[in-house]
Image 1 (cartoon, helix red, strand yellow):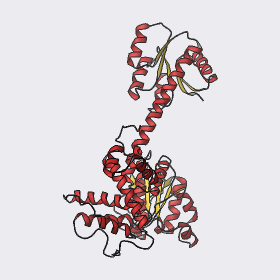
Image 2 (spheres, one colour):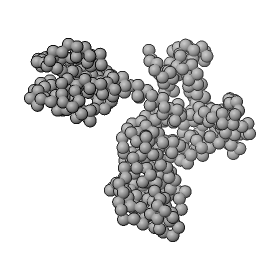
Image 3 (cartoon, one colour):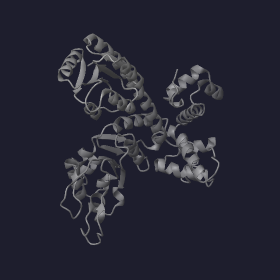
Image 4 (tube, one colour):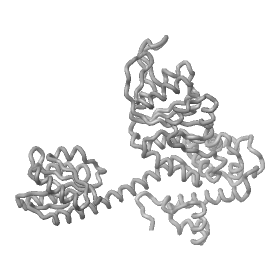
Length: 453
């Protein structure tokens, strides 16, 4: 296909003829008899061209043009008239029309204008998409921090899945950041303006689980004072995040499965079905297939929840991220407490890199908070006194520290390679090789709106 075209004219014969001409040239064509019909199907993301007659009942072509320009000033609109009205043509072009064609016109004249307009629209859409990708990439990097390859892959997967509406299962150890990943899946999705509702299944007593999840009517059970909207209903239009899903009682698993299948729910004490539109993101520590084999989790529910799966690696498997994360959380803590940020010394960094972090990012946040307050060394008291531990070679620690130094310098100088070379006292070729080895790209550090050259 050469592109999309919407053609608006109140004469059926002209609509049919133009549609045939354009479709023979490879365009996908939709015709409308009234301007309001076109307005109902066009949005700012429309990738094609509009062609409109000027003189039409109700809303004329110039009125339509005014509304389309307000919707998207870069949307190509070709105006057509049979009256040879030069002042009208000038007015249309001043209002933002892409071109003006006088009836009767040849197919060649129309096709030439449409092809040029379509080429322009394609470039506009491509540039917008690139700008949006750049903006989203910058935003997610500030939400899911890390310079490691695993975090780079995780950010890419999150952005890819965020644009879909599939249910996602997140796997990861305690404190690894599962809710933060779920929040990103919501924030970068078309549902972002609607509620993000989180529920920790392990924190809800089984006796009130059904009421918490599905809601209840007044008098549904002893103590039910008034109507209550459950978490599922509250998430309508948005995202429901079920953390520690493995802790959900089997009786409620059956009811959740029914909601996902039928997209309706019934409050406790009611027979009325309520339609719900939501995306479910769940998180679990154990392998849910093992839970299924043990009879603790329903297999049919697992398949509903696990359309796509994301794995968050433990902090010990991405040690190169530790200096960046620690600096970020320590700076945040210092700002909260009205203190000056305290950079970690080389000895402290070595201790951070040597610790196994069983509590993952949550434990690191606690250590950063204590460091910002000057209470204790950054690593917990249980950390080994020696710099190295089993499985963490000196070479690994040096690689992680080098990656952090490069990241910090690139961030500080906003991708200015000359300034980074001067600070780190490295020749250009060596710097390029090290950046490539650590997966660092200059373009990721350029200010918004800048172009890599």
